[in-house]
Image (cartoon, rainbow, N blue to C red):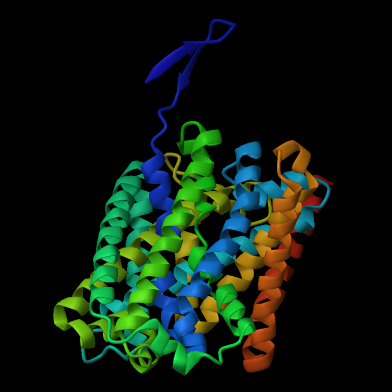
Length: 442
């Protein structure tokens, strides 16, 4: 430890920062390269076929627009409350708005944890005869959530090192998978275009919007601001590097998949499409490698999401917008927030299905990112933000949200009603706690 003297002669103890740039990139990549490609691949191919890699890149560009506002606000405020804290500080006279965005973003994180856990379980049991047993899949998903909740409670530094190991190992595995798939191509892009040439541009942009949840996770870097050095440098460096790597990984894997695996195989086993398809093309060792990559990817995503979002929960609870006990920490670790998020993710796994969780997560983070773009626009002179990039982000995120809602209304109106019901419940909870906070002030 290093000690410094202030002007009164008292000794201030400077706490060592435990997370460096590799850990921060790992947290962001852990949050993004999780259920992402393993979950959206089957859904994307079923909708737009050969254009899946293009849609995935467009989704990454939308995520980059969203990241612009997060980076600017994160460097300006330097608050581990991130999304919630940025909105609360930008609009200090609107407690309901602060409470609402807090509830939305936390339950968005919970839905992505459920998505990652569901994907982990699907791949973990994909090689067994009971691979299609839904309840066993959900039980395995609950077990992996519990495991990483305990790891996050155990140690910040321990979590960081485990996250490093999982993330960088899975990147090597995913690179190998991509190389092998492309080398074992069964067709070509021109031949695929002959059979998929009638796909509309609107469908490509709808899929790009649906894949936005695959890039959710970059903002988890900001939640670790108290555990990092030089946030002005490390926040943008970690976030933009992680998004670039995620786009590259998703593009190459999706390209390899559509070239090597017949579309019908990808669509038929969409919960574990990559493993099932690769197994048929490359044999047992190929599917085993994909399964290992999927397990590492989803594990690190659960861990990274739980780490960052639990710290945001404590900030929201401390302000009175969530139950008070969630603000308590033990040895600087938000134990009760971690447990609370793990329990709710476990319940969502048991209550929901893959597509519902995916679409709820994408809509939630598009809406929240849209609000962040608006907040950055309001104080752009303070955050030193470009008006052009800020407006471009706002328009892009608004269009993505509208496209998902249009898709749901056109194809699955009953699912849109269910998602609307979830938002109504979250909004009601946010309103109750915002009113309670006002009463406590009085």
